[in-house]
Length: 243
Image (tube, one colour):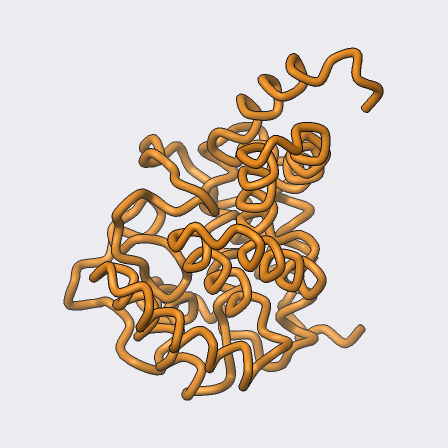
């Protein structure tokens, strides 16, 4: 696979800049803070690792991951899908080997920025409007925006993942699971999609399947908030059932 000249050095540097940070906010399904207005990368403005003033929030069509890095003086804008995939592969390795949650957090944030990256201004605008609608509790409007995203860009995993979240908010768990599986087919290491899938499976009584998904998630992101505790509880529940 072709890589840009400084790609590995860049990804390594990002991973090694993990410093001790504040604790993460309480997490809702898919790793989203409850009732938080979402930014383009799926994280709330001013969450740990972002800390942007409202005036610095991405505008319609602007990619949050690259915008955030530009303000830090780092070029994180992948020049093509191969660059993006290579960056993600490098960062997933560092995430899986993180020593603690403080080190994992900025790596995970960078990965989420790469998930949300799109070369299409149209998709960027639709995603921004979907997040704003979610923040305003306008689920139907958000769903319309995300329906358009997955129709226009069916290979964009983040569109499927975020539409799954809307379905979940509407208690449409079958559609949520379907969209999460589409997201994971495109991005198998999408730890937020795995988190959402595991939670839905657990809530619907599919404990063994939920545990397997959590175990897969923890191999990718060992410090995903709440995942280890949920997996430990499920392990006790299904012990002796031949998993």
